Length: 260
Image (cartoon, rainbow, N blue to C red; front, side, top):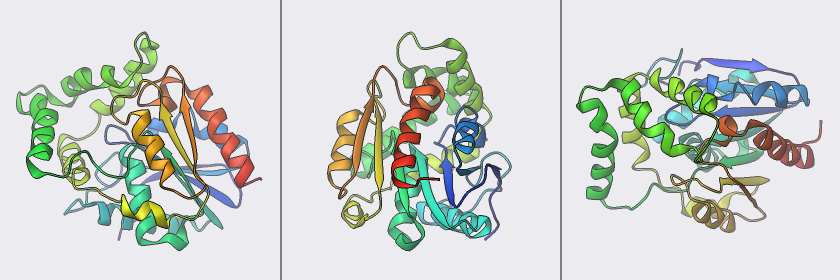
């Protein structure tokens, strides 16, 4: 499998793989990667297949996305691997941990869940239709981002940060967005949570309506020894909306479990 495109910063025995969500790309971590690298961690922000500079894969499935991440990890060749996944990135992190547990030494599951919504097909199809509607109406990814991204931020959030996230989503190819959403509606690694045996931080945003705190907290309760934290006054994309708060929280976890 081809190595996905990535941006690497920093050095160290512990590599932190930064896995963006469905509306992101490696640039989603622009406010975080340098801070983590400066603290002594090797950071690797990827473009998921189909995003940014990474070629698409077909079919686009959770398993094949995890295999693409495995290929990247082997290419980087770090001594220890911590997966920091946001939203869909958190699902891919769980998928890889389930398929190749020996490759994962730590997990930070940021505003994500262990299964996608309800398990019945009609509900999933309704979700996809609602998300695809702006594209089907000809609004393009820019119009879609303008509708969706504001719902992912706290009321009164910094408009500069909101515009940044919207611009990031607008750059996602429409075909890749459709393929990614079609993949995650079938995601379910709920049972595998009990098999996770590495240091894990489950991180929620207090005002997140996409991965509500109650969902993230319940996920943490199913993982032995997992830490659950809820960031106050923040929505779904804390790493962009409140990067200083996000970075300090992540670094506290990393320094405790993976000191440099």
